[in-house]
Length: 401
Ligand code: HEM
Figure 1 (cartoon, protein in one colour):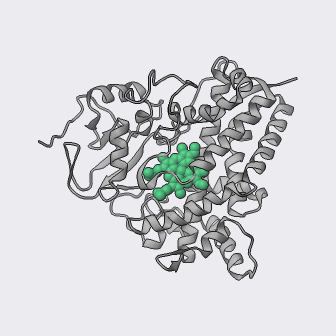
Figure 2: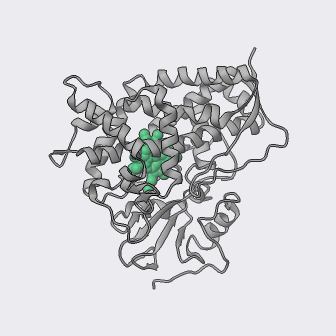
Figure 3: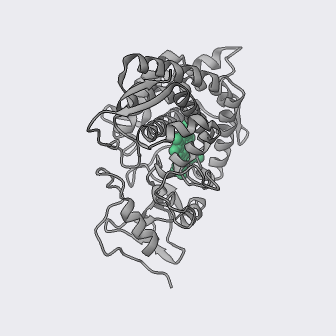
């Protein structure tokens, strides 16, 4: 029998402003792993259910738009594109991201991280989110996509502006319709990158050129599709990876002995990155819309219902992790978390994000003997409902002798 298990307490999964409600998640995992919240939206709390739901792409669609907002297919972001076309666009993205392994990205990331830490050490007291965590992903993605690295601040600002504005929810910003109207400077810049490569008989061998040349369903992507994809890649890789780096720096500063352990056993660094992605999950929730009436794992869901995939909850699922709230370096399967999502929309930038996190830790534990948080520091989460990372990290850095 299908059921509608309403929660017997008021709770809005969007409300993460005062911190992530891990105690509510725990109660839900124990008592009502799939529940209907007081807002009318569904919430999935456990990892197995989340992974199963993430595979049901015909039933649960990513929804960043307000109900009723329809956009032309060319302007759909990759997470919204229905199958089978999504799979084809994904193949292009995967192959273009995979190319970073061959490229200069790791060397570049290491040089940049060293330089940012040099500057921060020189200042003694510094704020790590703005001065270290933010510039790394914006610069790395700029280099990967083939934009001059000195433009990374522009990209970072534009991407923040899109994220904090009304686009894509209403498919318009205060300045106009669609992405082009909502952020003309960003779009103009990306369009010019595309136009330059189209007119150049020997374009640079970068990600953007690769995207231009690859075919989907026997056709190349149009300029508007390319622009939408490039802007989305930039935004999705930027804020998320910034929080991963900030979370790692916060762990180094606040978890007794971690910095020394990783200095003595640098082979544990990849595990530390995974453990951060799990226990400090950057993505708190993914939001989907139910596309047709369905029964999912015994629960009757109606077309148009909203459903939250509780990534931060699933990543602390007792069925998968002993002492799930603890940050530990001895997890048997450190990569098994849902921090990058699951199913056909699983994050295509995961290897790049892992690379940036690993290099950050390698450089930080080699260069620093201590990161001291400003006296009285209190962790304040960024004001984005789905994202987890500190807004500020004011610290004093002590270099190694
Ligand atoms: C720590 C860093 C990151 C985290 C935690 C993260 C997390 C995620 C998650 C959970 C999803 C699934 C979304 C869904 O199912 O709706 C996703 C999708 C995506 N991510 Fe990431 N991401 C990170 C870094 C990156 C980077 C560096 C890039 C770009 C190079 C990127 C590009 C994308 C794209 C394009 C998608 C959409 C994929 C699709 O719909 O097929 N991400 N990411």
